[in-house]
Length: 195
Ligand code: S6P
Ligand code: ZN
Image 1 (cartoon, rainbow, N blue to C red):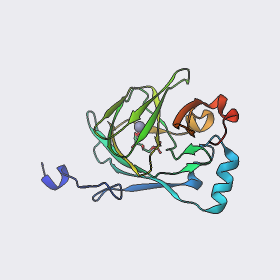
Image 2: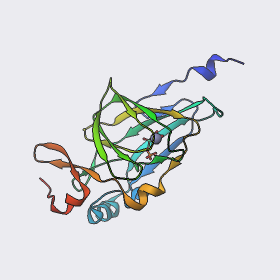
Image 3: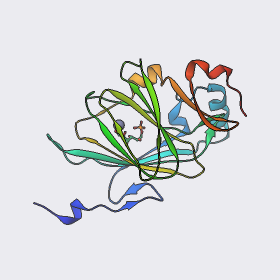
Image 4: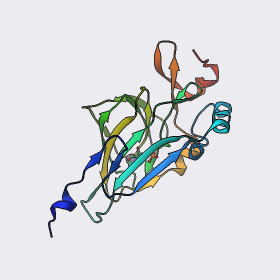
């Protein structure tokens, strides 16, 4: 049966929630191992355990051809010189692609092949759409002063694999430089200094 209340959902862009949908929150304590600067991470966590991001999901549909989606709100802030970011993941079903749609704020997406041998970054901005191909790890970074709000739409059978990236992390790191955000290789991070 087609039912309009099931078809149309209200998005609350301020809180990052979709009406009537489950929400997952990630705090700083959930992101151990994500930031390159582990000293800055531990000392930030001793001060407080702030909310870093919230994702509200529509994931009721199952079966071939169905879609799921997540409304993400990533807070502004830094751990040392690194901007707040999501954990990042691969899709468990590796061929599953995803579209990200920027709604508010200024972000960067880090994309990396599933075997970690190629990495790129791109902007995630309002009125822009990013195609994350299959077999590609993805992470979102807030480089602005306000919450970064975006939607991701992906196949219902994509699934989420966090453990592969927990083990190796992304090769690229986004840091605050003296002339604004810059993307560096993780292997270059120890040489980086706060502006
Ligand atoms: C899901 C999609 C997003 C992320 C969200 C949080 O496939 O890519 O909704 O779940 O950006 O990131 P993460 O890495 O914690 O799932
Ligand atoms: Zn995804």
